[in-house]
Amino acid sequence: MTEVFKGRLAILGMGYIGLPTAVAIATRGIDVIGVDINPATVAAISRGEVPFVEPDLAVAVSGAVAMGRLTATTQTPEADAFIIAVPTPFNEDRTANLSYVKAAAEQIAPRLKPGNIVVLESTSPPGTTEKVGKWIGALRPDLRMPRNGDAIADVFVAHCPERVLPGRIMIEMVTNDRVVGGLTPRCAEKAASIYRLFAQGEILLTDAESAEMAKLSENAYRDVNIAFANELSMICESLHIDIWEVIRLANRHPRVGILSPGPGVGGHCIPVDPWFIVSAAPELARLIRTARDVNDRRPHDVAEQVVAKAERFRSPTIACLGLTFKANVDDARESPAIEVVSLIAKALPEVEILVADPYVPTMPELLKGYGNLRLENAHEAVERADIVVLLVEHEPFRALRHTRLGGKVIYDTRGAWR
Image 1 (cartoon, rainbow, N blue to C red):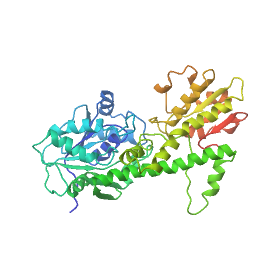
Image 2: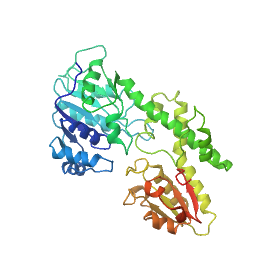
Image 3: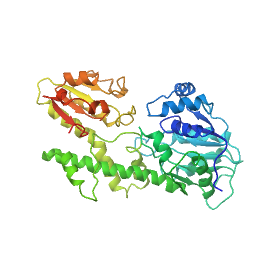
Image 4: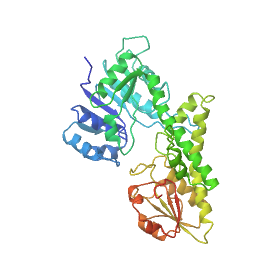
């Protein structure tokens, strides 16, 4: 008989992955305790509120809290299973910073008892799940930790990476297939019992390192394909060819599917995860490293194009539309749009630059040091601008009437106004 988890679950990290996961499980009748180091996040969840924008999540959180199935705290409680969903940024040398994962493992260790499950959801380099087991084992020598070839263990440790798209998290959390990799086959099976509570997609069992590498490979694959589109866009710009027409025609081939270029790659996953592969095998990951370099360079290329357009004017006003890393969300992590705006502001200190984003009510910290930046609504920014730069294709920007854009220099990095 297929095993399904029953018990009390704690999730460490109430961000874009941890909170939706908590809700998905709590609404299936499981008591879930959300743990976060930010008291404001804990207070918001305790009120049934969501500290960020994600479609359908607010109603789900409110309902789970009202039912008493979801609670939040800053302290790690005792539980029957623990999910680690904390950030894994990279260091200055672009190796993985696992300090948040290690801290979470150390918080869990004193609470563990035989039969508990520990799942790492944070995207991590190969071998991180094994490190989690070792970190816990060092603090709890009284517990038998799982080892390859040893079927006997007191605690079951596994990796189940998230694979959802911001703006569709609550849909994809349920419908997407899940990869569950255990330190032993029994660990994978025990962890899968948690995801069977809500996952409608197929649950694929494997070893921990394969699960870790599969998630990194997914994002590196996307990064390489985006880099091809961005590089092609730069080539077309230099040759004065319409990149959008080129892609439209090329994609009529039955085995070609070129992605759309943009001002860069943002979010917490794609700009970060490929570097974990590069750091694991730096001499072999040549294509992946080059793709990262192309996409990291892209905001500079876009900013240089805008600066070149501004030089045609004596005293232009520039409107930059969009600050988040993708359309119709408030997530600005690793946003290339913010980098583009900062580069333009730095290159043109005497030029007034109007910035608009319906999902960003205040100027981001990275842009507050520039005296020539002003946060405006989109209509006012476009009305006053000589140059309009579309950086994020939010629906309100797509809906702007072409009559408002008439007579202005347009730089549409997303192809939304073709």
